[in-house]
Structures are given as structure tokens and as C-alpha cells.
Amino acid sequence: MKLTAYRHPRPGWTRPRAAVAVGLACLAPAAAGAVLAVAGWLPDPAAFAGPGNAPPSPAHWLGTDVLGRDVASRLGWAAARFAGPASLAVVVALAVGGVLGVAEGLAGPVGRRAGRWTAQALDGVPKLVLVLLAASITRSDLGWTMAVVGLTFAPQVAGAVRASIERLRARAFIEAERCLGVGATRIVLLHILWGHSRRALVSQVTGVLAYAVLVESSLSYLGGALGVQEPSASWGNMLALARDGLFHGAWLPAAAPAAAICVTLLGFRLVGAGLLGALEDRP
Amino acid sequence: MSRGVRWQWLGWAVGQAGAAAVVLLGTSLVLFLVVEAAPGRGPDRLGTVTAAAGGPVAPRDRAGWAVRYGRWVAGAVRGEFGSSTAVQRGRPVAELLGSAARRSLSLSAAAFGLAVFAAAVVAAGRRVLPGAAGVAAWGVHLASALPVFLLVYGAVVWLNPAVARGAASGWWDAPGWFPFPSRPEGAAWWLGAGLLAVGDGFLADLCDRFSAQTDAVGAAGYRVGARLLRLPRLAVAVRATVPGVADHLAGRVTFLLGSLVVLESALGWPGLGYLAWRAAAERDLPVLLAVAVLLAVVVRTAAVAAGLVRAALDPRYRGSG
Image 1 (tube, rainbow over the protein chains, first blue to last red):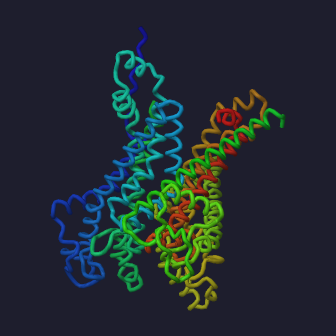
Image 2 (spheres, rainbow over the protein chains, first blue to last red):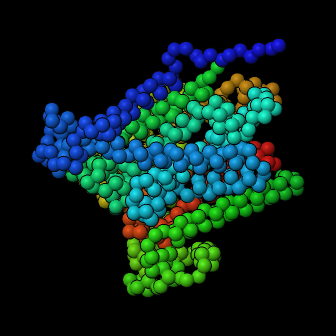
Image 3 (spheres, rainbow over the protein chains, first blue to last red):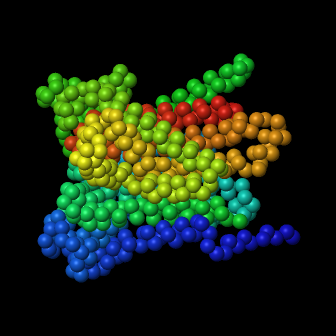
């Protein structure tokens, strides 16, 4: 009997692993801020805690904004407030994309074509324009806006799911499971998507999260009542509020949210790229 | 080209155009229904009955949604998208779209060209000067991690004081575009195109893709295959590289147009993006729907163009339909 050798992962530090580690380190501050806010260890983000544009002090680690509110607290609360809607975007992207991908990968010719055209129709309109439409109709409800962000990413997730199914459907272990009477749902969910495609799917999830951060901060920065509205905290509206202070030397209220946006986006991109790289790097 | 190949081409092109039309109709139907289902019972939400400029908008069309959608599509084919209900109340949407589309598409095309050129240079440089190209690639990734609105913010904050200081010191005269972003022309326009090309991860993504593609083509299999078949290596490389790159570029058009909305809104430059943002902020749904459908046409055209490139270089694709 011929035995297939078990493929051990390559030991030590590789570039993809380093990218994932650096990416997680980039995401740590935002995650820590959100946890501190939810745990109630950060002061009220809307409270006027001191003079406007005050420098950093033990009471206000990152100083205060132009209205005298604690910048560190607002950064943490913005992350905490965003976590729920961002999770909704991920759930919508995975659910809709999963259904479309399975339809494209497993259905008959008609179902396959319908799935492909639906994905193309969803992917056909620029994502941000669809998000603007949703924000306009729902009067800037962040939950709805993020649900549409997830919907616009469904074609990408569908592509990854379809590719996995097409790659694995003819493999011997899948044939064996079918012969043993294992149901199609179990094979797809457990053996194909979870067993062999989870890294690719997590990479797609990091893409959705990065785009969600980008969209939320862009809309809140641009204003026009489309993003998060004051006095609620958002990295985008913090930056917009600090815009003029920068010309008068108050750079920290602007630099802090700008750094938070950049570092978080970089973190999501590095984690996604690292996971994909690890997938290609498998022996 | 033989008659058989010509028929194969024709059949393939008709099939692609038909599929693109079906997808566009589906997209426009979904958008139409979303707008129709929007809460709030304003007068003639889609402005399908044109009113005099500045005057009151006509009352809501009472026909069924299928009839209304049919009328809207027929109007769109004739270049009529109803009239604006908020941005410029009563003004035909087609008038608003005309000049804005010209400005936005030229800006996007310039950004696209800049990004493709820079990504090609970085990818090619990896073979000639690996060290320098590696450093450049890192720089590209770091710069490209910045969102477009932050790049615009940084450019306004750092560029204007620097130019003003130089002009005050007598090093140069204040240029025509100063202060940035007063007018979308000349150096300011190119700067905007550059920011669009770099920001929101666009350039980093293209660099990664181009580099991966050149690595694949440089692999031993391609070289040996080309030598065995006595084919010019360049032709083999082009056939192996261009279709994948074209597909990828077509897929990125939707992201670039999204970044365009942010850039134009942040700079206040008139264009489709600024129009879409204002229409969304003022809940002018006829304008927003028209912009969305127009941009969907651009995205679908890019996808069909990528398919044509693939079909021209890869006969297997033509045969697959």
C-alpha cells in the first residue's frame, strides 16, 4: 500500500509568518483600545475633560482635541464602536459570497451561470458608489453601510470559494467521502472550506475589514452627513475636526487618528498578504 | 485570418457583448429597485418627469415598477436620466453628467497609466537592480497603505506652506495652481492623478501582481518551452503575462473609481465622484442612480476589453465562450 507522506509546515521564520506577526502587532493598539473602551477603563469620549488642544499629560495620554475631549479615549471608543458593524460586513460577505461561490462551483450550468452573473452584477458598480447609495438611503446608519460593504465584497469571496471547490472536487479524499455517503453540505463546509480553504477565506476577511475601515474613515472625514456624526467618535471625523488645528501647531489631535488609520490598514494588509503567502509557501 | 476563425471571433464577441448587456441590465434593475424601495415618500423620487429648472418637480409616477423601470431604461438609452431633485433642482441629470464624466474619466485614465507605468518599472527593475527595486517596492507598499483622503490631507498641509515659504523667500514665483487644490489643471491635476494612483493600496496591489507575473514568466518552464518550440521568448512572455495582467487591471477599475469619489470630494473638484458624493449627501437619488449606472458601464467595458485582450492572445479562451 502506498502511503502519502504527511506534509509538515516549514519550521522557523519565513516571510509570510513575519508579515502576519508584524500585521498582528499593527492591529494590537486598535484591539487594545476597543477592549479598554468596552471594559469601561476609558473616560467618556464626549466629555469636555480639559482645555482645547492640550498637550499630552498623565491625565490625557494623547492630549485633548480642539473641544477639550480626551483624544486617547476617543480613539479607543471609535475602535469599539466600529467593531460590531465591521463584524456585520464580514458576516454578510462570507454568507452571500459563500452561497454564490457554492452555486458557481457545484450547481448545474444554469445555476452556475446565474451565480456568475449575479456576482458580476454585484461587482459591476464601484463599491464606494454602492456604499454612498446605501448611506444616502439609510441616512448614514453605520450598520447598513457596513452590510453593503460586505455585500460588495461577496464576489471576491465567491471567487475564492469557487476556486477551492474546483481545485478539490476531483481529489481522492472527496471522492471517498462521497462514496461513504457524506452529505454535500458537510463536504463543502467542513472538508473543503474549513479544512483546505480557511487561510484563503481569512485573507478575504482581512480585505473586507481593511476596506470597511477605509470606507468608514473616508465617509466620516468627508462629512456631508454620510459617515459617523459628532459627538460620536470616529477616526475619520476626529481627523476632520483637527484639520484646522494643524495650521496652528496642534498636530497631535490630527496625527493620532491618522496614525491609527494607517497602522490598522497596514496591519490588515500584512496579515492578509502573509496568509496568502503562507498558502503559496506550503511544501 | 481564415473564415472559421473569423466566425469564431464574431460568435465570441457577440456572446460577450450580450452577457455584458444582461449583467448591466441586472445591475441597473437592482439599483433601480433599491432606489424605489428607499423609505420616505418624496415627490417623483427618480425625477423621471423633467420639470423646469429651479421649479417644482412633477408628482410621482403611479405606474408599476416594471413599467417605470422600462421607461427609465428607454430614457437612459436616449441619454435622459430624469432631472435632479436636490443638487441642482430641476436640471436634467444628463447635463450634469456630461462634463463631469469627461473630467473624471480623464483623471482616472491618467492615474491608471501612472500606476501601471510605476508597477511595470518596479517589476522590471527586480531583474536588473534587485536591491534598489526591493527598497522601491517597500516604499511603494508603505505609501500605498495610506488612504487617498489622508494623502490629499498631507499634500494640502505640507505642500502649500512649502510653496508659500519658497515664494516668500524669493526662490520661485507662486505657481498658477497655488494654493492647492484651487483648480484641477496643470501640475495640481497631475498631483491629483498621482495621489489617486498611489493611495488606497492601488499601486502596491499592481506592483505585487506585476512582480508575480514576471516571476512566473521568468520560470524555467517557459524558457525551456519557448526554446523547444523555437518561439521567440518575448512573444511567449507577452502571451503568458498580458492576459492575466489585463484581467487584474479590469478588476481594479472598480476600486480606482471608488478612490476617485474620495479624491474629488476631498479636493472639491467637479467630476462624477464629487457629483456622487453631493448627490448622496443631499439625497438626490436620480443623480446618484445615473452616476452609478454610468460607472457600471465603465467597469463592464473594462471587463469586456480585458476579455478581448485574453481572447486575442489565448485561443483556448475564445473557444470556451
